Length: 205
Image (cartoon, rainbow, N blue to C red; front, side, top):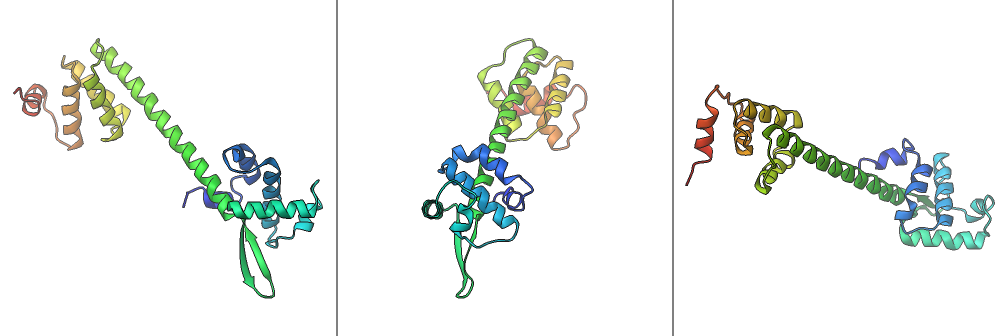
C-alpha cells in the first residue's frame, strides 16, 4: 500500500484540498467531489452511517438524486459499504478513495525524482565537458548515466573523480570510470598508477 494512504486517512494530509487538486485525474464529477468531502467529514466525527437524506440537507440536490450519486460512487469503487450486523446495518468507508489519491501523490514523487535525475545528468555533463574542454561522445554519456542510475554515485563523488583525472591530465571518461570503480571497492589509487590501472581495465585488443 502507498506510503500516503494513512496520512490521508488520518487527515494528516488535507483530504478536501487534495481531492480538489486531483479530482480531474479521477473518474468523478464536481458534484461527486462535494459528496466525497461531506462523507469524509462524517468519518472525521466517527459517523459511518450512510443516510442520503441527512447529507442532502446541506446540498442543492434532492435525496433521490443524492442516492443515485452515492450508488454511482459505490459502483466506481470510491465508497465502500460493509455489513456490520443485522441490527446496525451497513457502514461506509472511503479507503479506496484514499488509496487512489495516495497513488497520485506517489506518481508525482516518481515524476519529480525522474526530473531531478535528468537535471543532475545534464549539469554533470556540462561540468565534465568544461573540465575536459571537449564535447562528450554518446558512449561517454551512457557511462555517465550508468554512474547515476545504476552505480548510484553521488554527484560530488563523480565531480571529485573528474577533478582528479583532470589533475593527472587524463581527460577521459573511462579514466574516471576506473577511478570510481576502485573507490567503490575501497582500493586506494597511488599517484601515478591511474595509467597502469586504466591499461589493465581497458586493454587494447
